[in-house]
Length: 322
Length: 315
Image 1 (cartoon, each protein chain N blue to C red):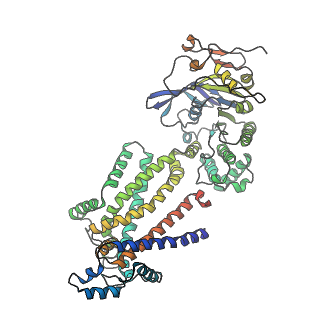
Image 2 (cartoon, each protein chain N blue to C red):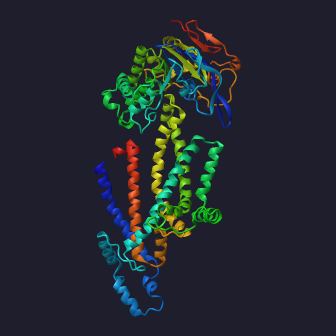
Image 3 (tube, rainbow over the protein chains, first blue to last red):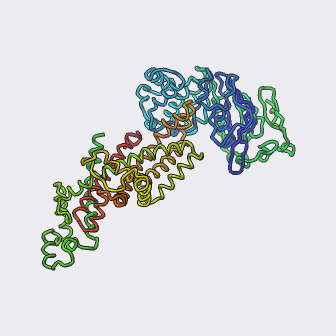
C-alpha cells in the first residue's frame, strides 16, 4: 500500500533552504487508520502534501520517496498518477469552507472527480455522485447534488469533500485535520464516517491531527512528529498506556482530564521552534527535562520497547510497573 | 430574477434625478454667457435682454431646471443654442461614431486584456510574464494623446496602412470599410484600459490560484491547464467583470481626447465644443445620456455578477 521511505522535504526560504521534514518513514495497510500527531509546524501537513504530490513550488523532496503498491510516485503530481492502476490516493483538507469551489455546484465537483478517471457518461457520473453523497450520509442526496457549497453547512461540506475524495475509488485516503474547523458534535459524526468508510471500503487512512483525543478515538496506530521527525511510533493503546518519548509524555500531560480541576493547565516549557537550520541530535532536547549533553549527538538511537512501539530517544521514559 | 430587475430599474430613477440636478447646476456655474457667444461682442443690451428672455435664461435657476426636467420627461431635450437644432438629433449625429468607437475598443480590451492576463499569471516570473507585465505597465502609463499621435505617425503618415483622421459614416459611401477609420483611435483608446485589465486579470488569477479549492481540484487529478480554465479563471473573472464598469467611465473621459486627436465627429468632441460655446442644452443632454449609460452598464455588470457568482443570488 502506501509507503513513505526516509522522506526529507526541503523548503526554500529567504534565509536559505531548510528541512521541514527529515527522514520520515511510515506505511499504511488496507483498512487501517494511522494517526500522525504533532504541533503546528512540525511537518505533518508537508508530509501529507508530499505523499499527495501537491508540495508548494518552494518545497521539494530532497531525499527518500513515496511508494504506492511498490511503485515510486514521489515526483508525480496527481494528474500524472491517473495511470497508476488501483493505486489511488485521495485527500480531504482542513477547511471545508474554502476547499470547495464556490461557483460550482457540489454535484459538478464530484462528477468532475469521477470523470477524470473513468470514461462514463454525464448521466452515469451523476448517478454515481448521488450514490457517493448518500454514502457520506448526506440526507436527500438527489436534491443536495444541485446545491452550491454556500448552501451547505460546514459538516455537510466536509461530507461533500469526502464524497469527492471517494469518487476516484481511493485505496489511500489522506485526511489533514478534517474536523478542526467543525463543531464538536459534527466532528464526532465525521470521525465515525471516516472509521466506517475505512472498515467497509478497506481504505487505508492517514489521519493528520494535533488532537490526541481524536487519535485515541479513531486511529489504529500513531506516529508522533516533532520538528520534522517522527519521534515515536506505536499502536494506539500502547502509546496512551506507555508514552515513551519525553515529548509524547509532555503532550499527554497537557490533556486536561474530566473530573480533575488542576490549579494550572499543564504545558511543555518553551515553544515549538520555527523552521530553521538543522540541529544535531534530538530536536526536542532544548525543551526536554531529561536531556543530557549527549542528546545533542548524532545519530540518535531508536529505543524499542519490543511491542511494535519505538521512540527516537536516548533516555526514554521506560515502562512503569503495571 | 424579474422582480430583481424591476427593482433595480426602479432604483435608477432617483439616481438619474439627482445626477441631472447636479449636472444642471454645475453647468450653470461655469462662468461665461451663451448669449454673447451667439450675438458676439457688438450686441446691444436690448438685443441681449430679448434673446435671454426668449431662451428662458432670465428665470431663476430652479425654475429653469423644473421646466427643463418637465420637457426631458416627455423626450424633449431642448434646442441647441449653437446649432439651432433639437439636442437629441445633435447627440444622435455623434452617437454613431462614439458607440462604434467604444464597441471596437471594448473588443480590443477583452481580446487582448483577458488572455494576456491569463498567460502572464500562468507563467508567473518567467520572461513571458515579465514581457507582458512590463508592456502592461508601459501602456497603462502612456497618455492616450501621445499614443494616438504616434499611431498616426507610424501607421498613417509613415506606413500609410490606415487613415489618420476623420470618420465617414458606415451608411455613406464605403460602407463597413469605413470602420478602418476607427482602428487607430480604438487602439489608442484601448491600450491603457487593456493594460489595466491585463494587470487585474493577472493579479486576480494569482490570488485565486492560492485558494484551497484549487488545491482540491489538483488533488482530484485534473490537469493544471484545465484547473486554470475551469476553476481559477471562472473565479478570477468576478473581479475582472466588475472592473468593466470602471473601464466604461475611463472610456468616456479618454474618448474626449481620442476624438480630438483623430478629429472624429463623436460625442466626446461634441461635449468639449459645447462647453466652449456654453451650449447648455447640449451639455445637459449629453451628460444625462452618459449618466444613463453608466447606470445601465453598472446594472449589466451586476447582472453578469449574479450569473457568474451563485453566492450573490441570495441577496
